[in-house]
Image (tube, rainbow, N blue to C red; front, top):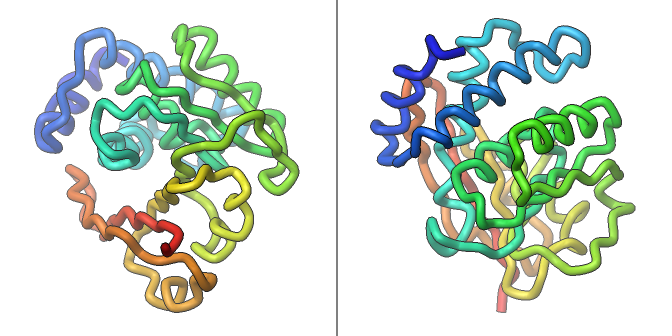
Amino acid sequence: MEQYRPRLQQAAAQMGLTLAGAQQDKLLAYLDLFARWNAAYNLSAVRDPSEMLERHIIDSLSVVNLCGTSSSDQSPLIDVGSGGGLPGIPLAIVHPERPVSLLDSNGKKSRFQFQVASQLKLGNINVVNQRVEAYRPDSLYAGVVSRAFASLQDMVSGSEHLLSPGGRFYAMKGKIPEDELSALPKGIKVEQLHTLQVPGCDAERHLIVLAREG
C-alpha cells in the first residue's frame, strides 16, 4: 500500500491535517487489511483499494478534528454502526489518547475491527459487538458519531442512552437532509453544521452536530 502514501499525504495537507509518519503507516496498514478482508467479509461494496482510500479513509479523516471540543479532546467517543471501522479507526489513529468504542451488531465486522486494533496496536479502541439499543456501557460517552446510520431521528432515538449529559451527536451525511432535520425529536437541536471539503470528492459532504436543548 506504499504507493498510496503520496495521495494520503496530499489529501491530509489539503485538509490542514498533520499526520506523523507512524500515523500514515497505520492508516495504510488499515487500508491493506480492509482490502484483504473485504473479499471475504463484504465490509464495503467498494473493491478497489485506491477508491477505498478516497471514499472511506480520506472521507473519515475530514471529520477527525470536528468530533469534539478540540483536536486534543480526550473524552470518550463511540462510533455507532461502525461497520469496517469508519470513521472510528482513522479517528483513533489520529488521536491515540482518545478512547474510541466501535459498535456493530455484525460479528464478522467486529472481528475485523478487533484484528485491526490488535495488529496496529491501537490500545485506545474498544470493540463492542452488540445491537445499539441493547448496549449498556459502564460509563457514558461524550460523543456519538455515525457515518452509515439511517436517519438522524433513528440515530438519536437509538443511541441517546449512550450519551453523557452535555454530550453531542456527530452525524456524517451527504446532502443536508432537510426532512430529517425537521423530524428531530423534541429537545434535540442542531448545534453546528459543517460543510466538509473532502479532497477528490465532488459530492456534498456534511457533518451535523446535534445537542440536547437546555
